[in-house]
Figure 1 (cartoon, one colour):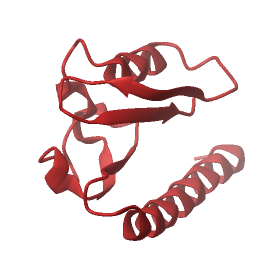
Figure 2: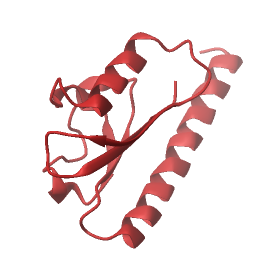
Figure 3: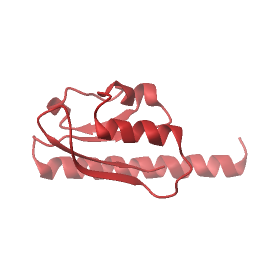
Figure 4: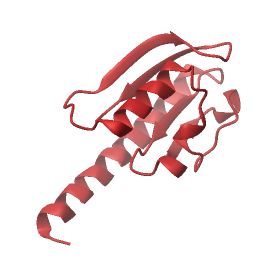
Length: 110
């Protein structure tokens, strides 16, 4: 692995660590009725790397991103991000309806 590639990999791992810590902090203050999930889209078959309040939907670390309902706008956004990683800004969907009785928001960095 060349230095440039190793540097990018290290930076990516640092970003995931920071997001994981942020998820833990948010999960401790929002209450047990709010699920927060961190996905690693480079591993869609086991994308969930951190989750707070997974009991809300029954999801766990290691679960795939691709098992969501096809009609769910958040999962649709993730599928689009998996296909098109050229955009520089995150895709943000706020307070969209889901098939579950809850509101949802989604941010997908590309």
